Image 1 (cartoon, rainbow, N blue to C red):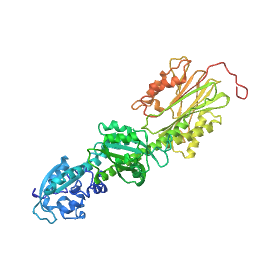
Image 2: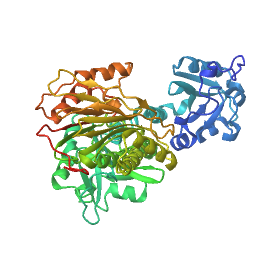
Image 3: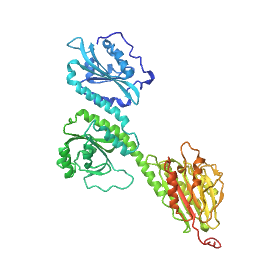
Image 4: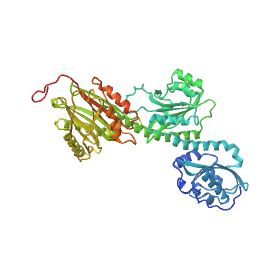
Length: 588
């Protein structure tokens, strides 16, 4: 195409809709250079203003100019003979439709023919819905037949890396991220893919491997079509797989480099494969494996194994570059998921130890408790409960909720519980305990506020003294009654604010009466007034001989199904029986 009227390439038809002046992060220079520097076709990346941000060596030769003479300059400035193509480039930016053009003209390179002819392909680059520029691929007409397949391969690899950014790492769950990675590369890049990761550091210990054997957890395994079911015999997700010291996986992690492995090596026993797995791999025609490390922040997380079967092309050097770049990006997502899972596991273990079933304060007092996390996708919160025996047959019950989630909330919960147990021994009324707890928390520098409901039950006096620091009201279920009592308690500010101002309310609580305490996860629902939510608890009933565990089952079945936060519940009652006389000076 002969050059026509000069167009102003600097006019950006998309203005603020473009990503900016430079290349988008999905097409950063090191990645583009690794993929395209060795390509025989001329390749350039232009920003949304048609300024060069990358040219490969082949295009330097075609244009007769070094890369430095391209970068930062517009298409028309670099190639004034071809400035008529600027209008075509702006059209691709505008509508996103690729263009393929036959171009004739002159560049700065010496040529044996004049004018020269090229075949140029223009593709718009999008990231996250934003237009970020163009990719230009140019070949001499004489080379177009030989290089067409290479051009398509390069374009496919760039598209693959661009798509990976939105397909992998959609959650903070490590196994989900591994499955997304395996699903993404099959069948686009391999016939079979396996993701193996190191065991978690927190939780149940993993059995010890034999000396010289590397043990990894298979997090994902995917095969194309019928292969998907057949390859499960190689260690389906969740199993631990052993790798010999000279296996491709072990060498990959030791050297932190991709390893190309002929599958025949497995038949010679290099990977600690069992004989039935060797036979199975032969029957499936698995021929070649490319193992790349999953490394983030200098820390090895595992490996991605890509396997091609008979009939698929062998891995090329460019495939190795693409696989490593893809694994590097996925490793960042896996590292985020691993760190999240590590923190979540610590918090879960800590909270589980702190929420162990409390001992009954007295054989005449029944206690039942439950803790129900919202789901795995929500960090462990600061819900807690406790029961502390006091003098003269009394006992203190506490239900609290530290604000926030994660390890910090669980640790703060342990501080609150320890301080409360310390103060309970001073035989103070509930409001005085809250006042002193509030002061101690403020002095300690703990920056996590918490709500708390305290109840001191006197099994001889038939009364329950209750005080609240920003917590929801208690529920009393009297034996034989058709409904429960939701007792309004004067509520003070949450603990840790330093404001004080708590009050104790006395509530009749005879033998057989159930005291029910809970955290807001049980009743709080999006878009509903909290008073309405709490009011539903008035429908709770329990027969005189009913079990407290049955009551908690009923509560969680009716109100816990759609909870958006963790739930802690506690039910207690004084067993009915013959009256017990209090001895002078306390005791029974």
